[in-house]
Image (tube, rainbow, N blue to C red; front, side):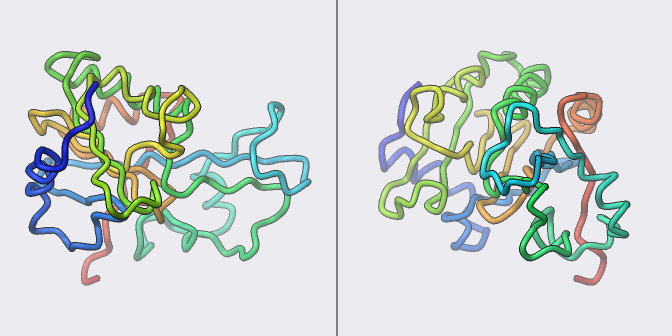
Length: 217
């Protein structure tokens, strides 16, 4: 694992030159792959105490049945998975909302396992991890690392790293897939082959949906 120096990092950032400049702070929504899916960040039903973290005995609350109960159609939403999909402000005290801008550790591990099966070098695939300015609250430094796919969790503070949130972007050096976790969203977009999408949907620990911006918006 190595942190890319400013010059190296800026060369990598040239790949995103056509995207809006503000995405340097939130994460880049790069395009160009055959398909994409959204990994929905976890939420929990709790005892109603307004906890900020999920208790060990909290029940995971899946998005799809909850949205159905609320009469919300994901495919009709103007925005990617976000707080705008839900009618609550504030949220009920017995529901711990999904985290904005970061996957939970269990979902990160599951996602990395799937990505490894669709990478030329498996878990040893060399990747670039990028952390946007809002995820680090550091707008003067380009926080970018090159490392094997299997070592991505080591970047996180829970594992001795320096970052609280999972990477804003992650991609292999051959650009065969791409991961985007926007700081303001409740889901992580994964782009790549149709085979990768099928593997994501088959992973039981991940809640995965297909969402595209409605026509005309």
